[in-house]
Image (tube, rainbow, N blue to C red; front, side, top):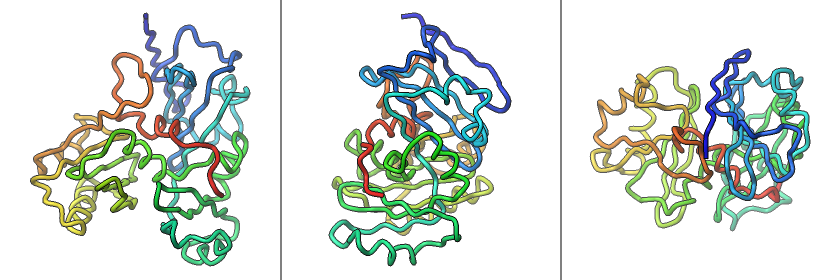
Length: 282
């Protein structure tokens, strides 16, 4: 098969890949996956049956979701399925054994909410629920494309992707997007730790990783730090981690069929959406 790599800047967005045989008017059998972070988003159009990536774009302004222009051909057609992964700066995790859907109003009090924020509930993993906040602006953007049952908390999607292959108890997982860090630790098929942080420089990034490792009593000389997201070996913040930690690796979990030359850690969150059913509790 011949792959066509199309790198073209359009506004601030970038097509990383555009299959030459892809026709935006033919959407049967295709799904649209969207990953929103801060004020920008990335997306993948995937052939559902084969899980083959047809189009992959990133760094588009969130306003493009509100009023499609550059991506009008892609965002204004109907797909077999559309799923969105969203960030949240206020969330709480409730064990399933303690969760009661009638207590959602009580759970809301655990969040930092504005008067126009929306509260959603996802099954975080097999043992926990997550109650999380979505801002009015974000709800407006994603509401143009999906219903509530197809909006997924970023941590849920990341954990689903990490559980795709049996995770190693000697791994601490770090997902980086912009200035946001998600850290996950899994052991004995159970979630032992999840949290997210904002950082402003490589030293702060390192600080949160060391802080969490110490909380979990992990020896960073023996624990592998597995990275995904917006990271590369030439990235200064990653070089900083590699200088200080002996075991820093890129996540190699491949969930979707990527074009030649692309690495699975770059689309881990988007590909993790394929593992999330659109039948969650909200």
